[in-house]
Length: 113
Length: 115
Image (cartoon, rainbow over all chains, first blue to last red):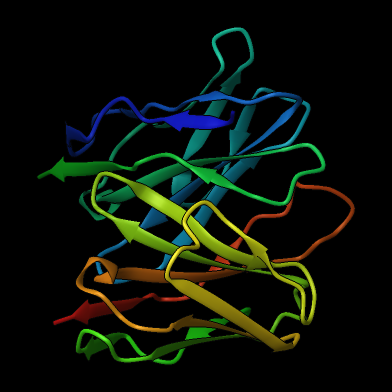
C-alpha cells in the first residue's frame, strides 16, 4: 500500500537559516512526488513536483526538493528561511497510471525572527 | 488565473441535518476530489470523480455521497450530519492529461462544525 511519512510534526528554524522538511514514501511503481503549502485558513498551494529527470527540482518561493530513490525520500529545502514561510507543508505521492494522491500528515514550519 | 471555489468558508449545522458542500472549478478539469483535513491526519480522500456522472470512493466514504452533474461542479453531501464529521473540507481538481503528473488545484476549504 502507498504511504507517505513526514517524520516531524513541527520544524522550527531561525530566519535566514536553511530549512529542511522531510518526506519519505512507500509506493509501488514509479512515484510522482509533490509538495504543497497551506497558509492559515487557506487551501493548499502547489510548490513543486518531481516527475522524472534531474533529482533536484526547483519550485515556487525559492523552495527546492531532492528526490532520492534509494532512500525513498523527497525532502523540501530552502537555503534561507523567511518568517513568511511559516505554514503547514504537505508531501504527496501519486503513482503511475493511478488517479489518487496520497498525502502525508503535514509538517508545521515555524520561522522565528 | 485558475480558480477552485467552495460555496462556504464556514458552516455550522446540527446533528441529523442534510448538508451540501459545493465546489466549482473554472479550468475544465476532468478530475475532481473531496478531502477532509484533520490535525495530525493530513488529507484523507472521501470521493473523487474523473468525469461527469462518474464517481469513485476514496479512503473514507462512509457517511458521505457526491454528485457530479456538470463538469465544473462537484458536490459533497452529508446525508445526516454527525459530530464526528466536524472537519475542514477541501475540494481539488486536476487535469487528466497523459499521465499522473499533473498537480492538484485546491479550493479555500469549508470549515464545518456539527453541533
